[in-house]
Image (cartoon, rainbow, N blue to C red; front, side, top):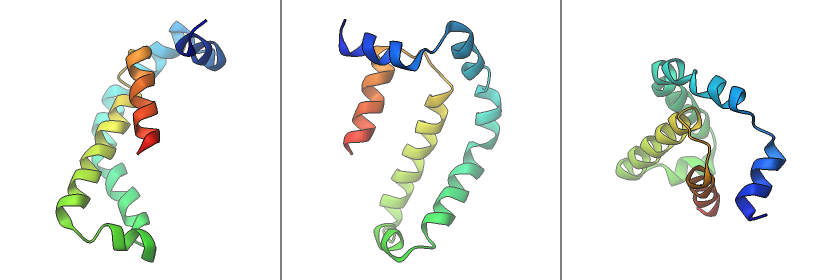
Length: 92
């Protein structure tokens, strides 16, 4: 079994659970901007992360990336491409 098959078996994510996740798309889309704002408000409370977010262009890109990440959690499909995307995020 390849790496993808092992990971999928480990999660035991059923088709019904995948459908449940994707059914959350409208809710996530409705609230994603506020979630990202709240997350970055929290990060700005700490000196180390505040120093990383002083450049407005970088902060904007990071916020956009966070928004796309959150939306992708409920978009599916939860396939090999999805796993590879999660692994790329983990490398950064």
